[in-house]
Length: 335
Image (cartoon, rainbow, N blue to C red; front, side, top):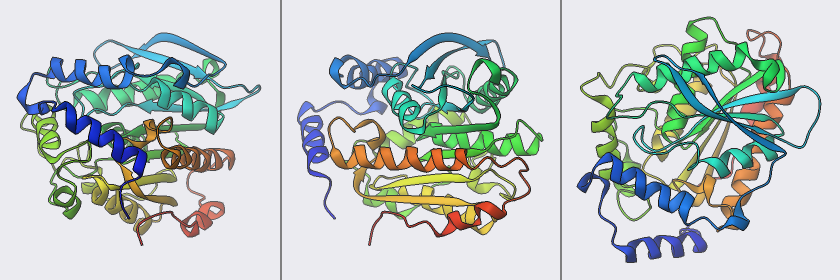
């Protein structure tokens, strides 16, 4: 199907601006440009209300990391979602993904802890996954300050953050903790080897370009082996025993096929998966709800999927019987 009309209008506006490619500038210039689009130009009325927010620091691998807590309009013990922002491991921060965390907090009915991990190229791989795993451990150790329910901790993220959420789930499994109840992977990158058809089909004109992806890769990898599962979770030799996942992709996204491949691999490993493939949408739609009713509906659906996982309360990670039916949930996607 064609690109969602409101999003197509946004893409036309961005094209008319004739912005230089990321590769033409410095990481700091790219960060300023991304903040302009996601923070400076955001109408105040589009910012979603939550009960409360709190800025703090959490423990990272090399020192404290900035973080932000979002609390929903709910009482009692709640689930906790540790969120990692996207931006190719190079750009993005707590503010650029503020509204995404607000949506997740409101729609999933959970406390969200958003973490600002160290960015490349100043801090290339493996700084980001190490920071995100350390922050997830901090969340588990301080869950009484967060949602309060130690049995309902999830990881989530978009794009690069989806990669990091998947990697943290692997790291937590291999380290035998912290126990995670779910993972939400929003159009994640899962395989730095690349070479997927969607990278060519959607190489230009849909916000994230193949040139952008190559630039992010060069900044982040710094010579690391792309087959390292901490870079490419799809390359992990064993995906069994991971927490149930919600995996979403967008039709006009160069990362589409990587997300599809990871969802299939999780299912083949026996991990319960809710797969959502959204026709007409692009990379970044999770933050476009104020512009596009289709993006808003997709965001609502994904948050509801994660909420359903977290409400199932699985005390024993080895007992997946109650979750087997998740494989059968219908997805919205390409025909």
